[in-house]
Image 1 (cartoon, helix red, strand yellow):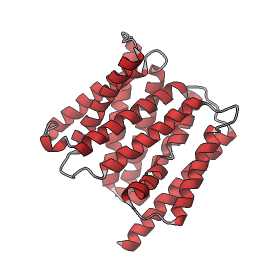
Image 2 (spheres, one colour):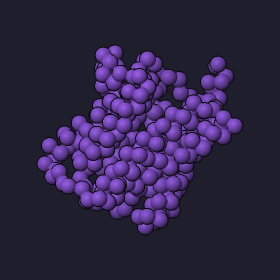
Image 3 (tube, one colour):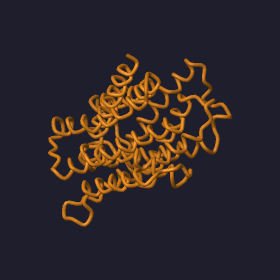
Length: 290
């Protein structure tokens, strides 16, 4: 029952993140990336500040503001800036498909920067997974869209964020870390607005609703993942992260009238297959050494 609850919570989280992406993409038609980042950052940071206060966590505690947590927040800001930019320029189904390579990038980063043992099977899976990315973006062909590189920048940012997270002491609450991350979104948005001289525009009632939806579903997605991973066996629950791609394909077709071609679907299948293999291999090795 715990695993079933965990699976349902993970699927709920992926629905939340997908709907957040939908609202961001809708906003990007009339609102600049910088204003989206600032607005989502302010309201989401406020939400996590209230949660932290409710749980008795001090968001301004000195021990929570270290070089490690600041670097994590910086990586979060870069990743969010690139991801929101990609949603404004690239079909949501393509963004979601390329973004699924993140777990493979994290495994590669752990091996390169932390010296974690990665055997030839997982290295092969990582290489094949990135071949799947190349199939989707097709550099050098007439169908290549340079804007998709923003998704890869986001993947790099998220990879560094998650690797840095491993070095954050357990006594720093998740609500505090999340508050820091969304503060980084505000700073990233302000920096982008300054360098690009983006105008700050008044939002309509509909756009305000989109912003509210983005905040609600983004926070829901985050807490869904946290609750899911605490509910049961990670080996059973984690693979359901890939349902985000399925939901993104559905909303891409139904809401944005997207039609992913066969090569995009093939590349996505390769990425998911190698990602699942890598995760199961890591789980098997951890059980063997445990």
